[in-house]
Amino acid sequence: MLADYHLHTSFSDDSVYPMEDVVKDAIEIGLDEICFTDHVDYGVKNDWDSGKEVIYRGGEPLANVDYPRYVEQIGKMQKLYGDRIGIKLGMEFGVQMHTIPQFEALFNRYPFDFIILSVHQVEDKEFWTQDFQRGHTQKEYNERYYEELLNLVNHFQDYSVLGHMDLIVRYDKIGVYPFSKVEPYVREILKKVIRDGKGIEVNTSSHRYGLKDATPSRKILQLYYQLGGRIITLGSDSHKPEHLGTYMKEARALLKSIGFEEFCTYERMNPIFHAL
Image 1: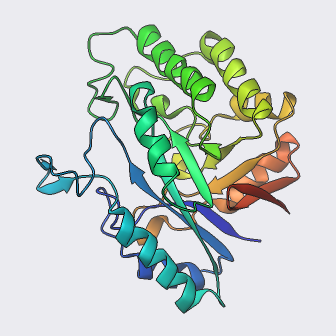
Image 2 (image 1 turned 90 degrees about the vertical axis):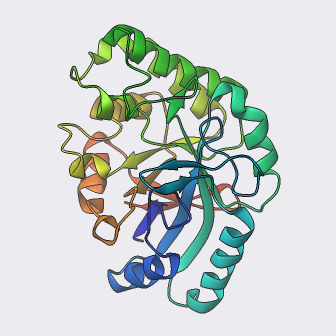
């Protein structure tokens, strides 16, 4: 089984990759299953039909997924290509504590197969712009990131896996903060994830971002395994054709070296296990 469970299309405001092209390309490179996980980030983005002023970034409108068209288009793709590749309905929820009610309402609107819970902002401050890090020490912004993630897993249940769990590393200009300093947070997060029957992903974008470690790090993956975690998905976090399905062999080899024997796909929020 070859599956890519973190894909962005033109329904995400940071991609112009047409959904049908993703499906055709996935078939071409031999994927057995894909799950679309386009972006929703309440707090910093409005819904496309909210009636609120549209915010622009780099000339492009900054908005959440057009939900009805998105679900309709995935249904169309399933009908057109479902005999050649599995296609699942997912989203990437960029949740913050104060946006939980909005995500709970959205989750209840559609029959999702899979939801990635990610932290892209804290207190409506973006990581990639350095707004979140600015004015804080490396210790402060790293610990605040994991504190938010711990609070989220304790208060939000409508998800399948945690996305790029140590995302803050990607945007830390000082360097990688010592794992030993955040390990207590990570341990509690993973214990809660496991108790709740949730999982984590291996996000292969670490390769194209030039990171020295996996995302999440090998130490996080090892700790998850040691604590008994076995639900794990593989995703390229693709936004362009050249990202699709990349570095999956490397991710599988990494997981095997740690001791994992299986990875998961999903159907109606239930994990399905496959041999690595």
